[in-house]
Image (spheres, one colour):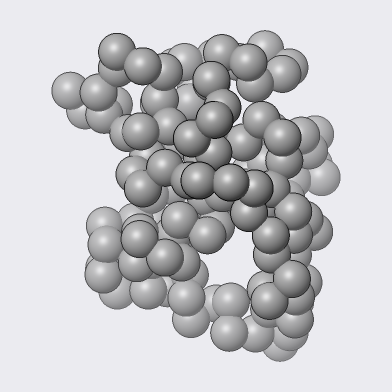
Length: 119
């Protein structure tokens, strides 16, 4: 069954952008909630993935859309195999646009001075 992404452009304050200070993310940025998003990160090359996706902070609850930075990280350096298989049926995956340099790992998206959530 084919499907489409709700969002194909990375938002201005996406935490995956190197230029974004997480504390500048609008609508009540919360370091604890941000760190908890580690549950959306698949072990690179795993065949099981996590079954979870990171939602874009610009979309309200009930109208969630994939975080474009997360999506492209997991398809690229994150090597999320189940997600790669899923997007094979995505009609607009080729329309995705990133905005500038991206973080390579989830830990890099956390505020400076913090390590990975497990540290």
